[in-house]
Length: 322
Image (cartoon, rainbow, N blue to C red; front, side):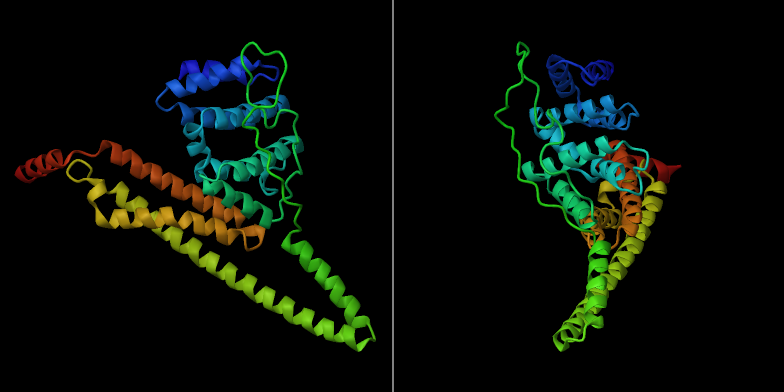
């Protein structure tokens, strides 16, 4: 860990060399938990109040994504990481985050969504943010945004062979902005004396009512899903907290396994539903996702410590004899 921290410090200095970045990538690949630890440390750097450090840390992360391949891609493709990025770019959370940093984060999320199809959760989050009205930058917002480190002897930057820049979609209005435009159009049509305009107004009213009904239905469905998920997470947490790991194997408990599967399957549905309703619920979705992450960590910690079947049977026998 100490070597990884030292190499990270060197790599994330605003004017660090490409050699320093390559050293960081090489170091993280040598440590058992290197990819996960590296991403967590980079997240802390991206939160830095020093804009240059935050931007350079994003660049280093992007280089690692492609240089270290699956090792890093598997980490950034999980909701644990993506939730942190959502918090950084959502207007409800990033009040004090520099606009330039937010733009770069959005640029990388957009790039990864297009170039890492094997990590579908990234694309789910990307689409969710777009549907929430987040406007992604068009094209490259940084001269180095898509550049990996060059060979150690290189003095100039050349375009890397794996530099893939997907054409970004155009900006999309939020549901609120679309409703405002429709309301203005409706007022204009209702004031008209043209019978055709009144017919158009009636059709527009029906369309707006139908859309509002669908939006309300989705909101109710999301609320129900959130409440059910919170109950499942709490139940799973309680079961794990009271589980006797000395005499039982957590992986063999059917109730725990069923709740575990349900919690894992819920997250993609929450993200999809959140993308279809107002952004006011985004905070609740993120909070619930964090709760799922915590209970999964609790389970994985117990899974790593559980006894073998023979040990569990032996411990049960000893307990009964006492």
